[in-house]
Image 1 (cartoon, rainbow, N blue to C red):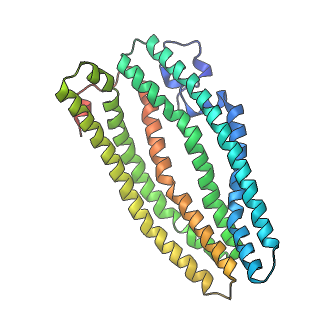
Image 2: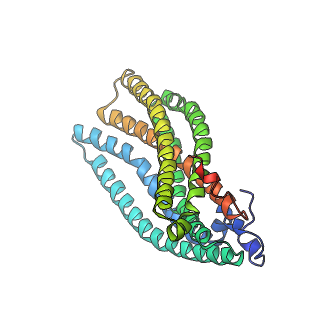
Image 3: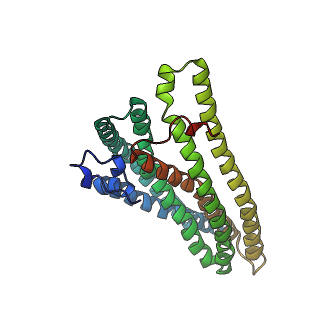
Length: 308
C-alpha cells in the first residue's frame, strides 16, 4: 500500500486515516508481533515433522522397535506446549492492539466531521487490519510451511513428487488472479452498503431497513458464490495431483507402509496450504478497499449502493 504510516501522521489531523496501513501497524507493535510469530514458526516446524514422525513410528512398530514411537510422543507434546502458549499470548496481544487502533480511528474520523454512521462502520472495518495480523499472517506462515515445507519433505522421499505438486501452482495463480479482481469489486459494494447501515436503522422506514439488509445479503451471497466457484475448480486440479503422487510413489520400488503414509500426509499438507490461498486473496481485497475508504473524503452515495 502507498499510504503513509501512523507515526508520520501523528501531527497531521487534516490527513485522512490512510495511516492505517499494514506496514505502519506492524512497525508500531513489532515487539508483540515478533514474539507471537516466533512461537508460531516453532509450532509449524514441529507440525511439519509430524508426518515423518508418524511414518517412523509405524515402520518401527511393524519391526518391533519403539524409538519411532518415543520420537512421535516428543514431537506431539512439544507441538502442543508451544501451540498452547502461543494461543494464550495471541489473544492478549491483539486485543490490546485493536483497542488502541479503534480509538485512533474514531478520534481522527471525528476530527474530519464524518457522519456517525461512517465512523462506526469504519471503526468496525479497522478490525480487519488487526485480523490480518492475528489470523491471516499466521495463515500465510502456516501455508508457507504447508506448501514449501511439504514439497521439501516430499523431495526427500522422491524428488519427482516436487514436480507433480509444483504443477498445481500455475492453475492456482490463474484462478486466484481472477478471484482477486472479483472479490475487490464485491467487497467494495458490500462496504458501500455497510457504511449507511446505522443511518438507515436510525432514520429509515421498515421498507428502507429491509431493502438495506437484502442488498447487504446479496453482496455477501455473491462473495460466497465466487469463493465456491474458485474452490470447486481448484479441487479438480488437487484431486489429479493427489492421484498422480500416490501412483508415482507406490509404483516405484517397495516403499514401507510408514513411508507411504508420510508421503500421503505431506501431499495433503501441500493441498491444504494451497486451499488457503483464496481466503488470503479475499482478505487482501477487503483490506485494499478499506484502506482506500478510510483514506477518502466522501465516497459513493446511495446511488452507488443500488447496484446489486
